[in-house]
Image (cartoon, rainbow, N blue to C red; front, side):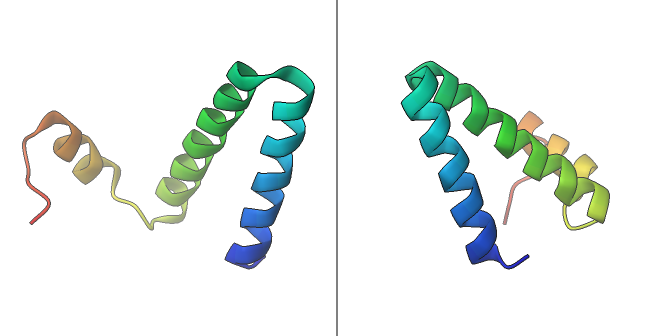
Length: 63
């Protein structure tokens, strides 16, 4: 699946949720999508989980 197709699918899901259930449901679904994408990147090896946690804790700079 290309990034464009993925973006279109995510946009469609968010639009339907926003129209049907309101703003806070839209925010909840968007957060769940972001967490799912992060977990997917960690599992596939594209994101280093320990480095990410260190950066969030302030133990390592990004530069």
